[in-house]
Image (cartoon, rainbow, N blue to C red):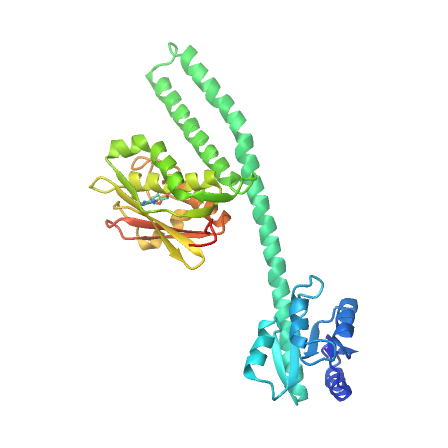
Length: 367
Ligand code: ADP
């Protein structure tokens, strides 16, 4: 017994009788409509599991009607099976499926032909609904986690400031009572609080992306890169690095976040240099509706097995003694890029440098 609720919209009485008989033999509850307008009204009233829709109706084109239903929040999730005479051209059949209908059945059809399609469409719609719910749940729990990370990092700042402050006071006022051992231990405590401060600040920066209303606008990346190079002046000079960039486009994004993105990538390219002084090149390529920006370096490179891992929060491939950092940089970059509607990935080989690719939406209509 199917227990399905099916709406059949067909102007031919004979077809309506056939549809009703086939569906009721499967124990479906059937609603019948003769016209498009009647079909829409019945669909709203009964919210059937599946709609079987004739392509040619006296008051409507079934394909157009289906397209309208796909944009109607009340009806968009009800699967539609189009039916038409067998002489329909292939192009019209394809157009029918492009309208958002999930199936196409040609007349004359058998009961098995009809029922198998109706059940298949119902199953598909159910699975789709489950996935949609699951996605909504995941999104809600992600937001909860982000809120949690934000609150925790924000609220931890104050007690940590108190601990650091009092440790410093203790070190200052009791310096004479401290023997060497106690002095060393105090330095370890202060080193730990500094590190914790850094981790909390990083976590806060990370959880702020997308949280506070960052204005999104057309951003000239040449200006972004100019600012970033100025900010990194000391590191560039100290490492004898060269930073070059081609003509850069205008992209869509938050100016502050794009500064953070390129600053992190160039900072890493300088930090993870090899034997030679760092050579960093930023290039841009238009690929269809996107700009692909690439930050290429001649540094130590990365093994392919770590290509995903390095984008995780606090994930690093080196100790702090080897290279300074907390491991938030690339996670922050990825979050920023996702937030601007793009994606990012890395191409690299150990010893042969790395290329970090970032895809962003154009800020101007034409390339
Ligand atoms: P951090 O720089 O604080 O370690 P990131 O999230 O920026 O954190 O980077 C994560 C890891 O990815 C780094 O520890 C490093 O191993 C690797 N990495 C990032 N950028 C580069 C690069 N340009 N060349 C080689 N390795 C890199």
